[in-house]
Image 1 (cartoon, rainbow, N blue to C red):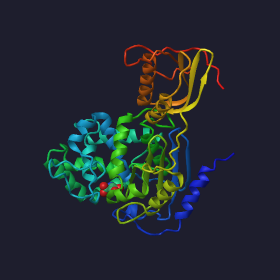
Image 2: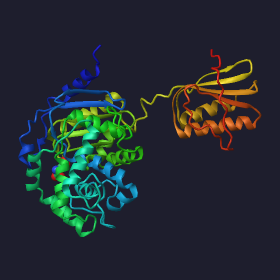
Image 3: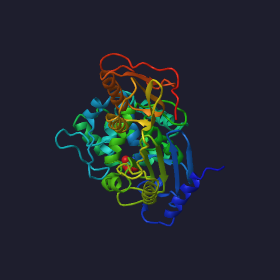
Image 4: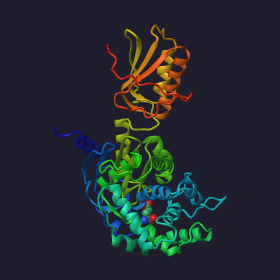
Length: 420
Ligand code: GLU
């Protein structure tokens, strides 16, 4: 059976195909000469399945979509405190290349505007790194994220360097306030190289899925970034990833995202998937016109909006409660997070316990988070305090920590208790 997902993506694209609004970026010939009709989309799940359609293998320069990835690398190398010394995390509400710094401490307000991106880039590979080594470090890391060797498009670099006075002025300003120590021309050279790394829509979907997957590349399974770094990066993308259209984007689409001047656009749905689109014509904010529309359709249709209260399915966490000869067995199922634990404990609070033993069967629990399990353990401890013998059934050894708040361990019961 062929998967219906590429056909679904194609349907989404066919809805936006006719839209010829917007203009291709024309500040360098390499972008100005791009075929404006290119249209591609790709989706990569955190389980590593990649689906794509349209012009999804056409190469283009990554441009500003490089910014969240380099920010993540800097966080990985230095930690949040150090990175926060040179760049903030507030949305700027200004254009991406605005000559603006925070008025209190002169730091760029976030890493998604050029001033912030240039400052962050200077951290990569150590502050004393040469431009060549720093660029190579970024290229190699982007290649790991994409799962294939990426290259830098020299012609894009050269053109950018010839028309990037505004970025030079940003770098001089950053030097003036001791945010960077590199020569302004070197700082911009690194940044321009990073923007000229060549990707396809498929590459971007996989790279986005890596951020959505807590830093583990879902196809190669390589762990590249920590989960905390990804969370921080996605948080900043959600408030500042879409230039000065970030607020409207979050309201309409509701997915952490980043766009670039070449027409690429990525969205990361934490724990679920990375999506990328490519269509070179841009709106006034610099975001791809058809990309934004495709994302709006995808988000509404697939129920991807992070702030939506629709499509949040909660399975009943208690599958059933069964009284066997010597024990009351509580069979759980699904995800055991705080919400699930709350509902389980709420339901069990008034239970008439006829048996002396209480057994918690987690063999059908698919995922356990720290807080959910902590609450459940405390519930078990209180049952023991009330005179019950407690135990868990955990045939797959999913419960890594069985220590209760009083220092004792919940015993494991070996046999599978009979079930209705
Ligand atoms: N190279 C571009 C610049 O910094 C990237 C801009 C963008 O993609 O928004 O001017």
